[in-house]
Amino acid sequence: MNVAPRMHRLGTESAFEVLARARALERQGREIIHLEIGEPDFDTPVHIKEAAKRALDAGATHYGPSAGLPELREAIAKHVTETRGVPVSPEQVVVTPGAKPIMFFTIMALAGAGDEVIYPNPGFPIYESVINFVGAVPVPIPLREERDFGFDMDLFEQRVSDRTRLIVINSPENPTGGVLDRAQIERIAAIAAARDIPVLADEIYRQFLYEGEFVSIYAVPGMHQRTILLDGFSKSYAMTGWRLGYGVMPAELAEHVTRLMVNSASCTASFVQLAGVAALQGDQTPVARMVAEFRRRRDLLVDGLNRLPGVRCARPRGAFYVFPNVTGTGRPSGEVAERLLQEAGVAVLSGTAFGAHGEGYLRLSYANSEANLRAALERMRPVLEAFAR
Image (tube, rainbow, N blue to C red; front, side, top):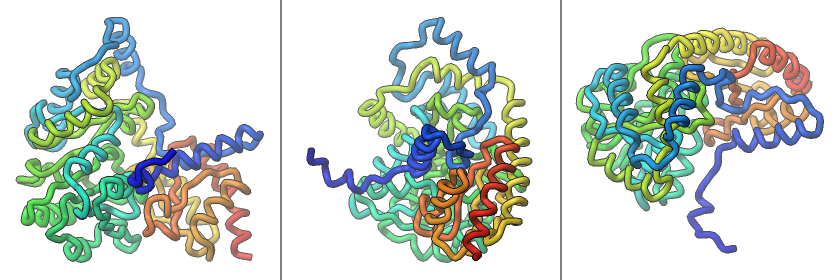
């Protein structure tokens, strides 16, 4: 079957590919420690699951409005108003099955053939994939270790042009764990405002911040008028399989994004949305406990990695990933990742899974138990020592 040429421009998310290969090894009897997938290993809090059960029993199994149930849109508007300090109305909210459609729909709505989209690299691979898919031109901003994986602001200013139609930022960042500070956010905002360029702000890891302050570009004066805020429930509430995310944007853009929902998924499952209401309005203690546990795991993993040969690892300030530098092995990061999987039974991702500027790095998720993290470090040592011989 001949597929449309644009399909060859559409990338993938390597975490799922590596997960599939690791599962295949497990079916062969291998014991694999999974550090490749960005999924909290905590269960969804009980009060959220109970809300979903009640919703099912009450018959919330039918079509709902494409933009989302009014009660969830209201709850999201209230939540964003409180957490970003900017008044938000339900008309600005679009609920989607997972947060990923907000990336897809925003880029599709705002960028076309020949337009330029600025995005972080290494960064979440779907940014570049969708930019290519719509025929736009990807304009990467390298995130460099020596800058704490923040934007190179001078390069950013050079790469903004009259053809720039969208700026994508992510803080805290996947895969580096870096966090954009206030000065960087305000400078990005000033350039976006001066040139009237919309910003897609991916804030899905907002609650996973271990040091410093979280700064949302949405809260910078005047930026709510040109920002599409992306957030969701997968990470903070351990609801990855529920598929529940949302975007907050100017109401006129929300109408276009809602039409894309109509033409694709129709709507997000109603009982899942009612569980989302319970997540936002219910007890937040499980979130705080999870973040505290992730901080302990981060420190364990960073300290352990820095004791391994050929590895140095900065201590990330956010998300639940580490991004160790493995240039000391003298091998490409893809080879290091493959050897760790095949020889050590530790599934990690090559930094190149997140863009060309990820070469020389690995991404490890510490969404796994302390015991497994310790075991992974022990298993990795002989493979890394072999590179030095």
